[in-house]
Image (tube, rainbow, N blue to C red; front, side):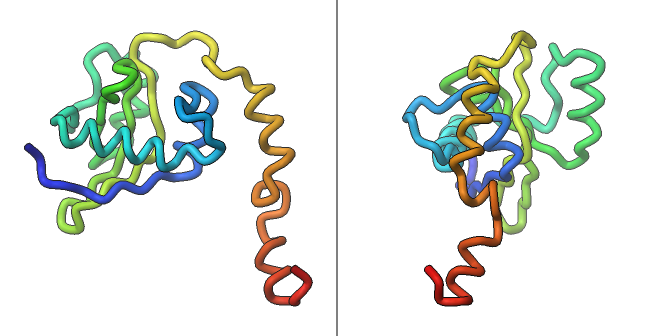
Length: 139
């Protein structure tokens, strides 16, 4: 069994997950779900330093371009591959993006749903608003 790692997820990876896969838990913040899935797949030994064999030419170039990457195949949805940076010394994984190796069709979650979420997300509409409200005492 591989040594345990701490998993962090970028905003880009979370957005791709929302658009391409969708949450199974119905939450707005998918980062904990992604971290859990990556951690479980890592523990099951589903990590590789080599891009998937079925990668098309464009995808292979994109994945190979991320030198030092680790590719982790999801246990829940096996055609989803999480592209991560691995800090071996710190035992940390950073999920950068995800890729699907067998299905290049339209996203499972339509863009109109993920775009609608952005309108209600104060952190995306005005990223500094909460900080300014705390600083100015207007919260």
